Image (cartoon, rainbow, N blue to C red; front, side, top):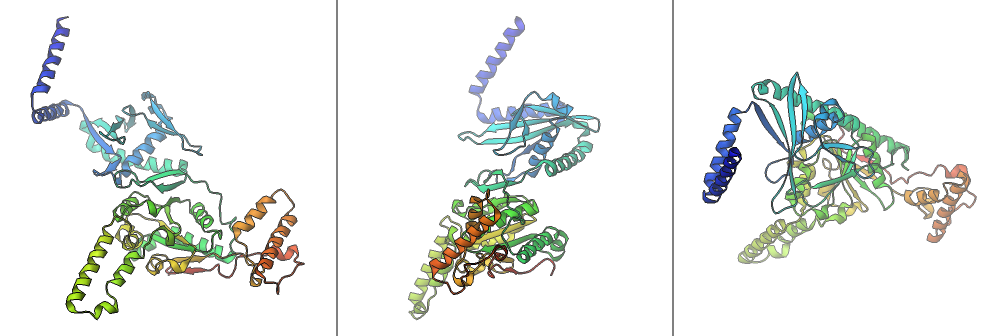
Amino acid sequence: MDVLSQLWSLLGLLTVLQNILPAQILSLLHSLIESLQDLISQYSYFDIPEFNGYCGVDINDLYRHVNLYLNSVTSSATASTCRRFSLSRSRSSNCISFTIAPNHTIHDSFNGHSLCWTHQVETVQDSLEEKRSFTLKLPKRHRHVLLSPYLQHVTSRAEEFERVSRERRLFTNNGNASYESGWVSVPFRHPSTFETLALESQLKRQIMEDLKTFASGKEFYHRVGRAWKRGYLLYGPPGSGKSSLIAAMANYLCYDVYDLELTKVTDNSELRALLIQTSNRLIIVIEDIDCSLDLTADRMLKATTATPTRRKRSSSSSGYNKDLGACNYQLLEESGRVTLSGLLNFTDGLWSCCGEERIIVFTTNHRDKVDPALVRCGRMDVHVSLGTCESCIRSGGSLTPAQIGEILLRNRGSNADLATKEVVSAMQARILSTGGTEHLNTSIEYEETVTLTRSPQSVLTVGSSPEN
């Protein structure tokens, strides 16, 4: 009873001191107590935060490896020491992820030594965001011989687990890249492959060979001092198969897909932050590049600051207009939006070298509306034109692969000949609607219709290839 009363007296004294002493002294006392604990403790502690830095822009790759490693050992005997796990499964996914519950501990062993992992989760004040980290606890006297080999073991085990069990993801930006992870993802399960694409065999073979050469060109890019990336420009009318081709490329290379929505990006800084938060072995897609943003506005503004009529004015007037144009351009750069120079630096500047094995794909319905600086060789190395299907195209009729696919989908339970005849009938109706009948043959047989291919517009223009 005396011990209990003394304990209550001590707690009361601590409460009084906490209310009386200044915050600086309390912080000093707290630091002294922690130092004393570290001095007498037999263990060393290492924190691994989810993000590097204060703003949380740079993802800590070691945190991801630790999470994968602990996920891989949850089914083993070492996981029996943890009493609680968090189970999750993404929508349309078959994989169940195991994670240590917040502020819980799991024990592990390495080279005869016992180690301990704790999952720390803290809620940031005045915010709903969570600050996550892993804390590694190991014997202090063996930390110099344990830490580096054990972390190498964790990394190799995590990479192997990721290679075997990972599923490809489709990412999109959520507009919060400046302070947290700017990407959200879902499982990527698009059925499109090169075998199912309505492409000419030669064009299909050229694209597949270029992708294969790129994926195996690590030594080449390092030897010549170039960033290991490649740019694709896909252009053609709506329904010509641009999105299906991107999905087929991702399935062929087993890459993740990052769908970048430029209208959600506030400025060039956020665009760079999004690029930093991506990984390797991926395809970055910007669809309808000519419609996403007015990327030529800054170029047009530059041109209007030095017109011939202004050059004929007096020196004082010219100086005033020059200063006004410079101010307007500076306001444009600082107006909080993505500029052409920012996007160029994203695709081909210094910031494009922060990762490896990346493919950047631009799509557009109108190639002539895209700024030439975006599609020059070195940025968009491969230009793929996707046209309409070629049957009777000289007579004025054309059907896109999407239109033909819809006809075949409606007749998927019918005879193949009937479905093909409906395609021919639709083509003939299109020809009649355009008034082109001089080449129309109403007695087209099945043997002729099975040779439907893409129009001669479906060409592949390759810039610099790794083989060159």
